[in-house]
Image 1 (cartoon, helix red, strand yellow):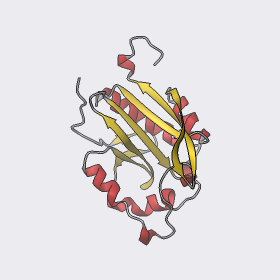
Image 2 (cartoon, rainbow, N blue to C red):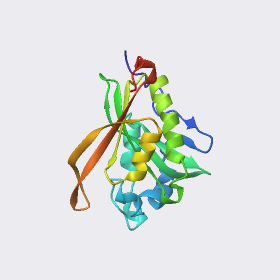
Image 3 (tube, helix red, strand yellow):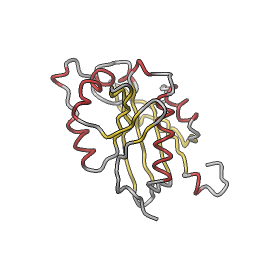
Image 4 (cartoon, rainbow, N blue to C red):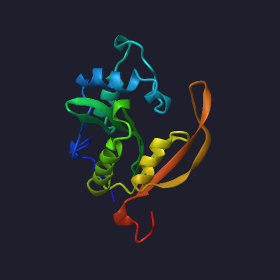
Amino acid sequence: MKLLLDHGCKILSTPRCICRPIKEDDIHDLFRYINHNKNVLQYFLAPYFEHIEDYSIDSLIQRSKDGILIWVIEVNSEAIGFIIEQTRDESARSIELGYAIGEPYWNQGYISEVMQHICTYLFNECNFHKISLSALIDNLASIRVMEKLGFMKEGICRDEVFYHERFHDVVYYYKINPSETKGDSN
């Protein structure tokens, strides 16, 4: 079976959000909510920027044009975060996603809501077999999101990333397409 990614990053609506492709107008919101917030960047591996003049989302826009899946999470006409494809293995029909959301929106269920819709889309419309997520081992909120979404713990990779001048362990979670589990627990 092949992946069906003809429509790429399809616009998805949830009860509270719109998930849509990234655009240049998102620069101010993403700067404010993600790359200019040290609390967000404690767990999301991206550079901090002091001034918006030094910040660019051109590489994200180009990656999106190149077929990498990047959904901006929009609430009340503001880009409050995003879901981004980290890796894709088309022969195995698997994908790893990452996500970040602005601190004012933490612990309100936005990532769970958005990820539920994106997983349904990737499994049902794009024909993915497996979706993987990961987090720094001390990012307990993200781990709770993965478990709430029904992802199963795959394992911990020790000293997996070097970030903020030290090594960090990373925990990996996965979910198998429910239509392909044949009664397995995942």
